[in-house]
Image (cartoon, rainbow, N blue to C red; front, side, top):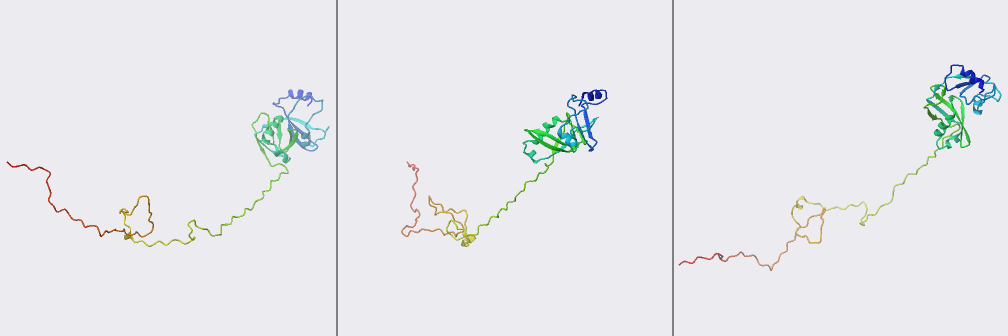
Length: 245
């Protein structure tokens, strides 16, 4: 802006930082901005190209400049104008860093930021607490809308074939036919004697008896063995008898 604008503003009771409302009466478009320097030629105001596009203003056109006070921003929502913005690794950090060069935001404007020698345009979809807010030294939450022309990637549902259950017949490891259960011999409760040792036990051999009839114990008889005869003689005392005189 020209130096004469600074002289006139200094005489007025204005608040800092200086914020301005720009209006193009021919197109009835308006936006808000700050000021960089007061070194322009008299009657001339330099604007960024993207701001002139928001105002539908041609080079050399007339613009009305008013000093305004704006509320401090608490929330803003942006819509990238190209899906290429999603290629940035951390778009939120890039935008927050680029907004340090801005003084205010107006709902409906399209701002331009430069990152990696490429220009990205973003439309201001929403601002709080007002449609025009100041973003100088503020704590503002930033949100994004889906980029213009963005399409969700189609998800091809892969039809997973249901596994077919085994339809053959299995073989047992013991060689027996499958499905044929052994028929154990019926047991009589009187045949099961508990607490009686196995007199046929042999060292080095373990016998497991399951669901089988207990075999009667074999009694070996020896015909040649003589019958037991009790002792029938007289006993002798180990104590010596006293001799009588």
